[in-house]
Image (tube, rainbow, N blue to C red; front, side, top):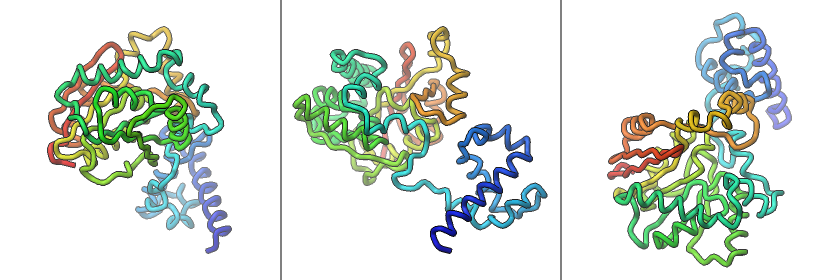
Length: 313
């Protein structure tokens, strides 16, 4: 089958799947986003069904595409954009100034260094035991345009400072910002596909993230826990910042959860928000991923977690 025939086959398969979707109320309730054009979860469901006999009569329209609907076709691909939640960070057409204004929670540009210093101070004061030694190899998840990388270098004096970001355009803006401000730090950047951190096992001493993971859908964050443990050295540690569920009460006049969920179901681009609880992080990190010395602290609407690899990388 040539490329054109393959495209036609895939298009016909999706049409068949949507015909089944329109006939089945259970599918419409389970995958409401498919009704607005986001078909990925519905296709993944079909991939699972394809592993079983097409016995249900409503599957008749799919029978000719059983071979196409298989899990291999829907495995994560390098350089894929796995979620609409990530697209808002990858706008090559935006100016550096507009990005600085947009991604930092409304903090004025002349206060961004103070904001960054505050985050690094919080990490080091809440979990002093998890801070790396001088000369460590450090990775920041969601490095943006590099303000927090810069603050971490001032505080921690690493030999390597690696910024990991889902958005290649953001990485280019980070390089532009560091050059504009004449920042001399041992900075390097990695783009990743949202699934796999492109680093060797047991290769970094310390991983941190602030004001980032709250915008990433939870399955990708949970997957990151495993990736962090994989790349940490046996003596390595991680400190991560999240948004707490207490935000729902403290910001009930300004934050509309139902609108947020509707936006996510529709696959709308924008700054998605996901909340966490202390119990959730303790259980997932300890028993789900086998992290060691897990500690979780809550401050206002923020929640902070630290853990060690303990030889499990």
